[in-house]
Image 1 (spheres, rainbow, N blue to C red):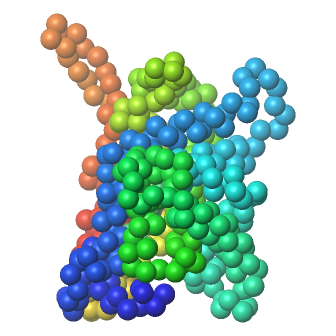
Image 2 (spheres, protein in one colour; image 1 turned 45 degrees about the vertical axis):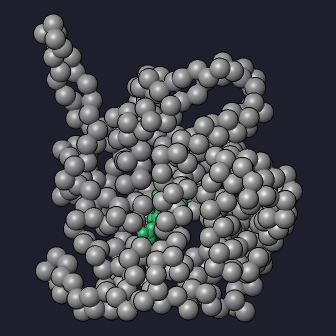
Image 3 (cartoon, protein in one colour; image 1 turned 30 degrees about the vertical axis):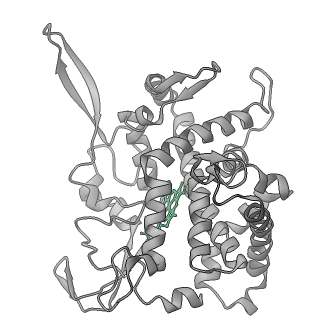
Length: 363
Ligand code: HEM
C-alpha cells in the first residue's frame, strides 16, 4: 500500500496535473502499459485463445462422450473446468498442481474481495481475512518457486506460453511488481486479484449464456450453425475455433451482449479531476461520480423493443437483418450485429464509460 500511496499521480494512464514523475516511474502508467501489451494486444489474445482451448479440451476429456452422467450442474462444471483451463493458460499448470484444492480455494476467495475492500475492518472480518490469506498463500508458494526457477534473461521471457509462469501477462505482472520493489507477499496478492479478474466475471457470464441457449433449442441450433464458421482443424486433427471469426459472429455477439447487459452489475466509480458537466449537472472538481451499470443497461428508452422489454432476455435484440445482392443479382438475407448509438448505455467492462458519461474525469 505504501508504494501506491507514495505515487500521487492517480490510477489512469495520464497523470494528474500535479504529477512530476516521468511515466516510467508511475505505478499505474506502467500497469496500464503492461496490460495493453500483454493482455489486450492481438498477440496475447491470440495466444490465450489457443492455449485456453487446448487446456479446456484436456478438461473435457475427463467426460467421455456417450457416457451417461447423472446430475450435471452447469455452473459447478464451468467453475471447476473452465477456471482450471483458464488458470493453466494464463499462469501455467503448476499453480494448480502445487496446491491441492486450489480451485475450491479460489471460489471461496471470490466471495470476499468486496467485503475486504468496503466492509468491516479486518479484526471484525476474520473469516474473510482467513479465506484471503489461504488463497494468497497458495499464490505465494507458486510465485516464489516460479520466480526462483525462471530465467528472466532467457528466451522464455518472450515466449507466448511456457510452463513456469504461463503467459505474457503473468510474466508482465511479476516484472511490473518487481520493478516497483513490491514485497513477495504483495506480488502474490496481485496474482490473487488478477486470478479474480480472470474468472469472476467471465465464468458467470458464460454460465448465463449456456443457460439461455439450453432453454431455447431453436436458438441453440442457430448458434451451433453459426459457430461452425469458426471451426478450424489443427495439424493434430483436433478441432479448434478461430477466435477472430468467433468474435465477429452476429448472433453470438448479440447473445453475449444481451447476457452482459442483463447480468453484469458493477458500480463504476471515478473522481472528477476538474469541474465537469454531466447531463446538465455541474460537478465540482474532486467529486466522486458513480455509474451503476444496471440503470443504463435496463433503460427501457434505449433497449426496449415492442414485445421485448429491456428487462427480458431477447437473443435477437442486437442484430438486424440485411438484404444483400450478389453480382448475379441473387438476393439473400444475413444478420448484422449492431449496438451503434447505444454504447453510451452499455459499459460492462467499465473502462470506456461512454458518451453519456464523459469520463475525462478520472484519477
Ligand atoms: C465478461 C467478462 C468480464 C467483465 C464483465 C469484466 C469487467 C470488468 C470491470 C467492470 C472492470 C473495472 C473497470 C473500471 O473500473 O473501469 C474490470 C477490470 C479489469 N479486468 Fe475485467 N472483466 C471481464 C473479464 C476479464 C478477464 C477475462 C480478464 C483477464 C484476463 C480481466 C482483467 C481485468 C483487469 C486486469 C482489470 C483492471 C484493469 C485496470 O485497472 O486497468 N477481465 N473488468
